[in-house]
Length: 318
Image (cartoon, rainbow, N blue to C red; front, side, top):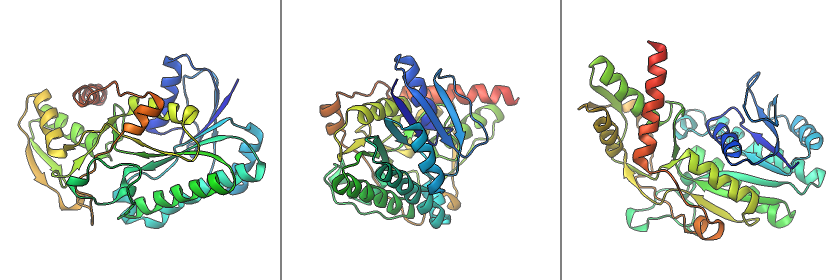
């Protein structure tokens, strides 16, 4: 049985990835790595190990013992706003950890295929008339998080081209879905709007809701990741995105309509970043044409599912 090593195994995307394998009857021996003491997963052939991925010797030992056929590298500090507050932590957790992994593979001379997950933030601030963003665009990172992700991508190319490592890269755009932490913008909106419905307090705290983003359901994301990990071309970069842009205020309107409420929007300056890309929309042509990937979930359905999840959480808390 082939083996998959998943870093960031206790995170949002990893949980959906193992669900995807289950739903599609894809059998692998999986080892999940994360910093939590323990993590449970319903996938049958799943083992978990607590690990500090900053420890190069330790991660090398794990890789040597497990000898994975694939590595899905999801461990990261993925918050742009947090990277402004903690730039060193962002760089160490997004770039140095990845370097520990690929350097271990190089030293062990393993043929492991590695999916290096990057970000749409790498593109920087392009004007609206340059949308959608394509993989051959020049990168113009404009926050600490995106600088770290560009560095990770450059290391990926370096190790693929010069050491022959089997690395495939993504530039992943915003992904959303049920159970996502409300430290991210859309789950925060959903939680606040549901609270407004239940309490009658219609005030919603927001940052800049005029920005345009490309949101993709996490269930479509993991489908893309599996296809890229197993069939993507080595050394290539794939945008993982919906191809559609929407203003954040329009998402608030959709959820408010689903709840049948009229919220009072209040700008919270603490939620506004020092610099923000105004419009980010991706081109997913390469992913579709090379790997026969197609998204299955539309935005309305995703938001409805997120609302249903949050309603269940609210019911348990009250």
